[in-house]
Amino acid sequence: MWYDTMCSDNPSTVIIRTEQLNRISEFSLPDGAQDGSVMIEAGVTFFQLAEYLHLNNASMGYTLVNWNITLAGSIAMGAHRSSLREDSMVAAGALELHIIDGSGEIRVIKRSDKDEWLAASTSLGLLGVIAKVKFKIYPDFKVYAKQDTLHETDVLEGDIYGMIAPYATANFWWWPYLRKFHLRYYDPIPDGFSDQEGFQSTFSVTKTEADLATALLNSGKILATSNMAAETLFFSLWSPPNFRDKRTDKAISSWPVYGWNYDVLIGGLYPGYGTEWDFGLRGVTLELAFPVTIGNAVLKRVRKAFDDELKKGIIMTSTYRSGINIKFGKPYNDLLGQVATDTEDGADWSKGALMFDFPTFKPSWGDGKRFNEEFYGKLAKTLITEFPCRPHWTKNTREVFRLAAENKKIDSGHLARFKAVREVFDPKGIFRSVVGETLGLY
Figure 1 (cartoon, rainbow, N blue to C red):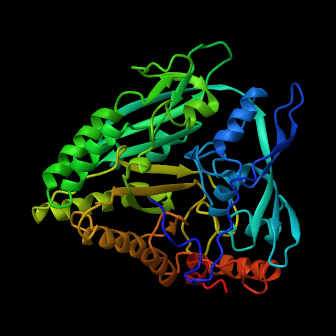
Figure 2: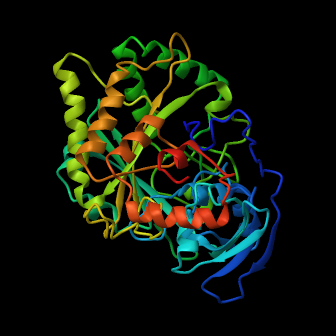
């Protein structure tokens, strides 16, 4: 799903791997305290930290994303959960970043309003290697998850902000062929409210399931009817809870679902299952952030793009197991984050951002192009040229980054300030990436 834009094309490029650096130390959460902190090394994944914290009656709160990636990497790329009410960028949980700079020295950057921190907070790896992170933690708590099915017009014509902002975390999944949305939302529950221990899995599949999905989706390279069948199937599978009871491994069949913070918000793999990518299912995606205040206009423009194809007799669908993901981000100010405010585009980002995340299946035969491949490039160009927006730093093609740069979608003042910090941390430009080159940061 992610692209080859996070490193340089230079054939002598050295890839630095950190997965074996996964010690957790300096746990501090005194009895009765509202929050505390813990020190983690660069290779610690969300799953590893969540297990450690749960054993110590603690949690990360809402600053978390996928279970199988590292916190340090997530901070560097500006990753986020979906919330307009709570801090949901992973970087919002960082209190200190220990970065090995271009001269091999370790710099300790503490949270502040200085440009050094504002650059390090979403660094794209261009300042150096994040070696350690001091991370904010909280007492553990349980949450509920609930999901509603909405007609498309309920969202396109509705109060999007009002549907998302009341909850600790919430998002939409869009099923464009069916003209439906799922609204998934989560909030804390009081102590003792439920003894259920739900555990979510988004990616768990058996080989048989993966083989069947691959056959159906591969035929969708040329047959719209296969894609229509796939969206209909995935919608039916995504409507009931994608949760099991952690104690018994039995499926939970009805909403709401209750469980511990991390298990319900993220979870992981079911025992004995593999991931989609373990069995060869591959995808590509487009993700752009827009001011939530223009969210209706953006989604209506996407709907128009689908309908314009329909007028030509071409039926476009979602080909991803949970549809098109519409996420949200509370404002968080740094130089290269997706949810910064007061930028030169003049748009109102003060209420947060809507992220349009459009994952699609990549066929594994022939030229690898998707059904009606040209549609996706046209849609990206339309959204970038017609609306104030910002690209996600790992989930877009080089062409999307080029279009964003050409259309000045990233604040030039922010870029200049980031470049000045980069030149101090890495004056020789050792840490390079296609994204950094496209943005003119060297």
